[in-house]
Image (tube, rainbow, N blue to C red; front, side, top):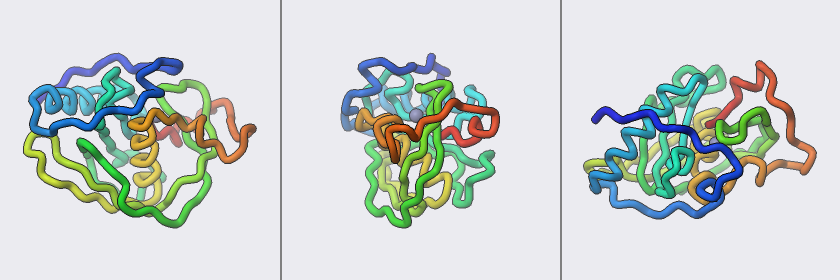
Length: 175
Ligand SMILES: [Zn+2]
């Protein structure tokens, strides 16, 4: 299914701080939203992942594609999941990250560098399990936070661990 790239929602906005709702992965509206999420992710430069609230939908859907990111080790390619949940997380490390919905800022955030996430494939509803590490793990955790209305600014290792985004940090953007 071909999706339509949508406008990105920028903070502050109520959809970015709300708890997103579980979805029926077989619902045609959910399938279409997943396609829109992918289309938006493909269109935005340096975008390695998005969550449905970032395109204005309070639904538990995320997309990730870290294949072009220098910090990636594991890479599931272009991934879209409904109702994703973290089932394992280990080896926590602080790293700088940013967010397309919080332009111009980056922050140091503690994330697990190894995770397992489970969800469902939009359309078939087939279960999906992804083991990720390094940047892909960080990016997935960043998107999971969006589904709980949490921004990286809520997770800074210190209140002063926020930085203006420079050209190098641009690459660290998690979506
Ligand atoms: Zn984000």
